[in-house]
Length: 459
Image (cartoon, rainbow, N blue to C red; front, side, top):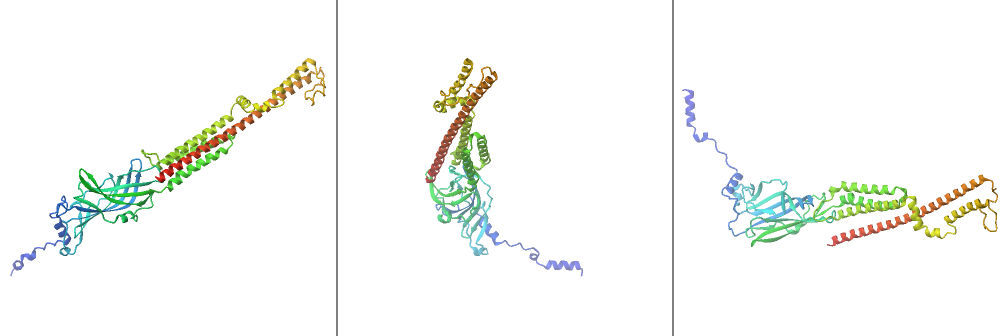
């Protein structure tokens, strides 16, 4: 028999059903997903009885504080957010689907509550989590990390020792409390003290996260709200070491610089260097101080007054140095009229009387041609007695005139030196007086700062 014919007979005897490949059986997960979403409407609140409100349970864990902007009054925080609610349309029997008790579904395919943060002002860099978990009893769990940029009333008056209280208020945007209600997933005390996940090595320290539930009435409708108060405190060590301590050192050095002699010429240079150094530090650390348009921080007042005190100290020193360097004529007039009048007026023989006596001696010599020695009339020997000088000796007369001129010059120089010394002494007294006034101003300034700080602390 022909082999080709024989093969044809054999193939014709095989049933056609055995030649068709069997279609793969769908998995239980696939069947469950198709069953749940086949007639599901994501735009309808998932309740059998429409009068029954859907309760959304909220949980919150603060992960970190990323940024605090005092000028724009914004705070950026990273949180772990959890929403749990019950969907009555997503229920199945695990025994019918290979014991599956929980599956993940796309969040776009099911109903998701419209819960927002009221203080939300900007879309942060939050990762997109497109899935939610659903268990067999209809409980939906929506877990996601969120970077929240929220508005916050920041009080920067006590910077860098400030504490901030920023609120995160969760509410349904459209649904009233009769449709969507809110509740805490964990007890409020547990949420308030839960800081285990907080990154505690940054600038801010998380104190607590108290929360409370309340309703907001708008247009005769009540809206459920849950408010979380994020209490944070700034760590001031960086600012104390970088700003406050150097500024205090500059002020202490400025006070001690008053002990430099004002006539040494180094005080002005030293105080100018202090003022320049303080300005450089202040400019370099300008970015560390938060800018705020509401109220000036106390540390800003501190730096401004410190700068004013340094300028005042330099001005006082310039004034004293100016007094010390008056011209000879001005010094003589002021010292003779103010300081030395009583002293020179009480002398037995003043400079003018001595000069008059010397000139009278020369006049008598020209008229009589000599001097007669009379020891009984003079209690002391006269330095300019001419009893041994001959009338015809003109060279001795010239020498005598030179000696008298020299005596007049020396006495004048001596009087000017005394006037100058008294003037310097007067300037030193003025310098001490100004220094005392400067200390009084600084004491008042320190007491005012402490009073303002105490008022803020007790408020």
